[in-house]
Length: 456
Image (cartoon, rainbow, N blue to C red; front, side):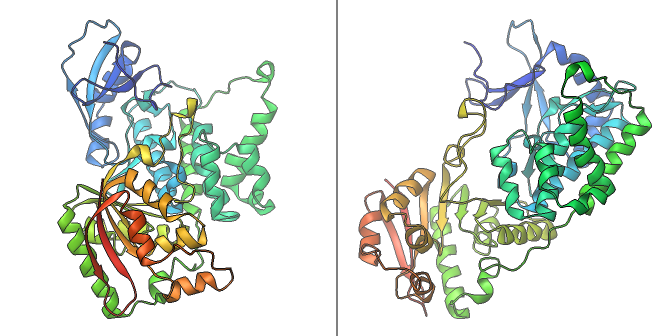
């Protein structure tokens, strides 16, 4: 039976990923990559990357195939959740870039280079960025330019520079340009002062100009790049990426827990209820949708349950990730997601990058202090919310916030109340079409109710 490649694994002739008949994830290594693979393993580079926590591990497994092109079969470490660069905060993308540069430096020291500097080859594993593509390396050829230089600039440097110097929302361009933001576009959007920043001038503005100049193959002559020049280039990229900073201004959601209408007793009561419901569901994984800075996400992650903490606000997600780094948390993954426009299927044949739903289902979905924003701020009918959530996870912990709540009153100040079905009985009747109710609990000193549902 022919192997079924994973939909995102088709671009590299060196090999691909597939699932075998038992469901194991297997990396196929072709004979064309034999020399590079053997050098990766014998040079000490693989061991160094393992020791420094920079690349996922793999085991070689016995071949049971007569495929003459098959050199090795590897069983890689499983990544709990595949996320994409357009779902990362500023510091996540920056750390992924610096990790890529560090790997390139270590590779050069061992006689290899990264032939592929795609941001999609980095995933957050146990709270830190790691390379997941074993076949990203090739033997270094003296005086050859770095083949992945443009890719690194498009996937990492350009979006980071645009976020730092123009607007954090420009990181969303990575969803439109999944092969990286074109350098001529980045150059045109960046302010004039960046042309006087040596790292940005060289690696974005002049780089973009050279791409235009040598777009005609007849005019292009491949340059010779000495090993010293290549090392200097990598150092330049590391310096400029390291210097880029985004100072987030406080937002309504980034400061949500400072200004929430929850009293301390109500906040503690809510945490107690949610914690009990998590324990009752006994989830293997949790997606906290509308997680803000992850206060309630940690009720799950601190129990060792892998938790995706997703929010639409870049400030909240940035703060959450910086806390993950600071406290070395290994079971929580902050992500930037807009539930009113969740990540769709993208790429070749609309199948290369999976939608949020296709990366599920999670065992437990949490939606705390979220339903009123979806139903009232964004006019999403309760029936649509219930239907979508039921496809994302087996269990649901959800907080109903009634119209009498001050947070809902704020939403209704500047608009007509057309939400006749937005009440507790309407909520319960609607969600009961997709779920069985396990239990509910009123939050003391508030008007809110928290429910634990199981999808039908």
